Image 1 (cartoon, rainbow, N blue to C red):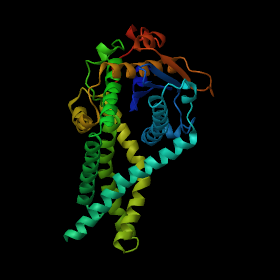
Image 2 (cartoon, rainbow, N blue to C red):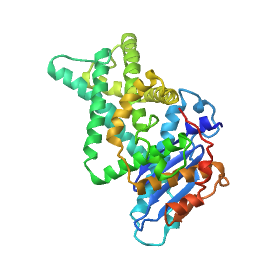
Image 3 (spheres, rainbow, N blue to C red):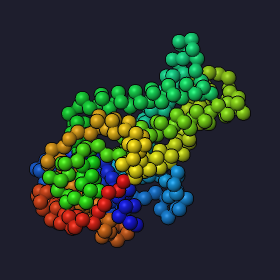
Length: 355
């Protein structure tokens, strides 16, 4: 895998008092402990459909990457919660292990809530609103899908604005910004230190927020193309208004797989050509919404993000044997973490702009 290709697999997410990073097949989670030490857990990226070439092909891999990110991300969140909330117990070794059952339960619950809030609710709200206003709208009408898309964005932005009122969420958003600034420094070929990372914006074109905005845009197009001919060919499923809408929502669910695939490829394309005007135009809505989901981090938050990135790169370059337990290390400060995780090697200038 070339450095250019590997950078498209460099990303992460904010967790509680820390950052998860992926670099190739390496995964790391760094968390700031209450005593200010940095706890770093390293492991392999948990892959689904391992060895399957079909699910790694363009336009299919997007859905798989989304599920893999959920699984690895929620495991990282569980770990960060254990570490960040831990009182001086001296049991960090136990914190390095995640139980698969809670992870899958949490993933299932998160997906169900997301589908309810961002798929079922906007669809039913637009249909019911049209019916109550005396101007009924249905899935064979392009305007229905446009309005549903606007409602989805409204729900998403409103949700983000609401949770950003919470102090803990604002700290999470600052770690999100730290994640992006660290990756910007890597892509620019700069030393992975606080001074260089802080020069960059907290927004990034490959962010999951941008991906979600692209999913909404692509879903408008796909649903507008699929439902009119479907209704023309098969007619109304039952003729009962509300029940038909429930069936349409169910039909939408499997369509989210190709929609996610298309959105993923579109995001990769815009990130690869971000110096071009058309790519900047496509990426702008997601970057704008990132003003809600990111904050400028403090130096100590950047230290955690950089520790995670260094650890993920080291894990990818020197993976543990298959089946090994995650490796857990505790560093007194960022200087110790950077020294142990090969920060000097990252200054060798062996990285280039991913886009």
